[in-house]
Length: 234
Picture 1 (cartoon, one colour):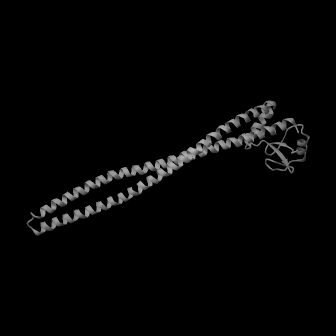
Picture 2 (cartoon, rainbow, N blue to C red; picture 1 turned 120 degrees about the horizontal axis):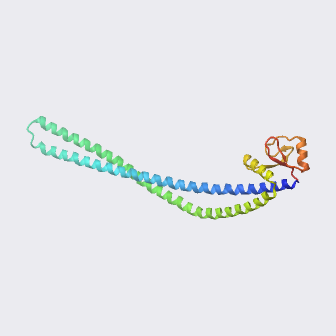
Picture 3 (cartoon, rainbow, N blue to C red; picture 1 turned 90 degrees about the vertical axis):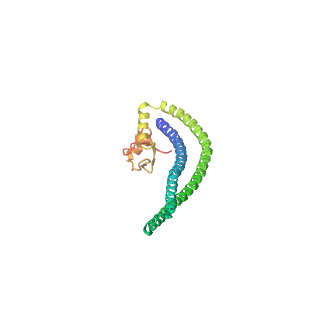
């Protein structure tokens, strides 16, 4: 096999390993992000529920004030009953008192609905806080593992970078540039084997003269379709 081609295959194997490690690092960062987003979402849900309870507190105070105002009117009308001199005036006061009682009942119903809602919100807050704690604990445990894994991955990448440089340094510049260009445009795979007379990259049938040139191993041969560098498995 052409020495330059052998070096390119070794270089690609290094790059494949490096890409796999980079993918693992990316997965760790993504998982970390998911934990952080999940915790943030729970915290926002807790804050929203607390904010709703706070608004309801103002609402309940307003309604308590309305009830007190209605009760005061009812009390005054009851006192006025003793002083009226006509049946019409008496009936009018009774109507006012009854209307006041109905208004009070309606306000109390509104308060009851809000109180029941707040009770559910308080339970929801407790559940969300427990969920937040569980996520936080799991993240804390995973974080230690992530840090160890990231450190090892970074060390492995540093070693691969050194190996990669050694391979690049022995290749002519035009060949290394060709490799980099194809690799960047073909999802990281620039050198492919011939498989049953087809290109191992795009799987197109290869002309006999192309296969012959590859077998001779004198020069680098590329696939006319996908432009990947071809080699014959030993």
